[in-house]
Image (cartoon, rainbow, N blue to C red):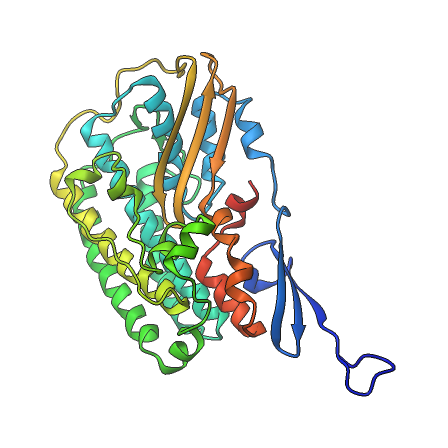
Length: 371
């Protein structure tokens, strides 16, 4: 931008990207200061979707809070439900039946695949490629149909309960789930062939938004964003919960910590999730799906922290109980919010088009960022 009264002087231009911008994947605004096309500074603005979820939880029964957690990361509903029921169970000393634990794992891993499929498709759209999202939503729709048959809802499931699950799965569930795994495996292979080695895709992602493992830890990053930088931290392995310690699966890690690594890691994770589902189905035996506890949970006075591996990272919840039917205080540790902190460091020095790519690889969900 030409500076008045100067022959050659320039000033940085401020550009608002969002909050109504398709590449921000929600009501999120990036304030960019650019010199030509190069980004000199970036300020993220959040809060457009703030609903006071944590405060609302203090006025709801523990069973009602599950529906509020469905609406945090609204692409990973089952994973959200698992962390809140796990926290209350930990505080109460309740152990769900083995069958219920396996049903939870299967639902959460299908949800992880569905979440990653949305990432592949929208990430490709961010760079101008429409075809992958058509494949990904085709396969995700099959997962949503399974979710609907189990919980009665496509998205806001309200299926997990303190002590187990709302109801048992149908007799044909193992066969349907195994057949779906085969279909999803083929779908992941198609996405892999479409994008991973594509020359244009590599040019747009390789070496873009690099972050080292040490810096990623300093920023508090977690999930695929952290593992892409070579740090093999996964709550399912490092602090096993449910029955994950009985299952054999790998933790994919990257080496470069760039946008390509963050993309490809989710391809590998989806494959591992399929392996986990198949193992969990093989372990399923007839039995109860709900522990014998009072219908309205009333944990003893105390405090508890529980966390699980959400598709976007380490999702935690801290609860303070005064012995009543509602939490005295509840606080969420949201992975998308923490991952977003590194956005400025990842983006400065790159171009405007790269900012869209870098933000896309963080895979944020604004319902969980703002709460």
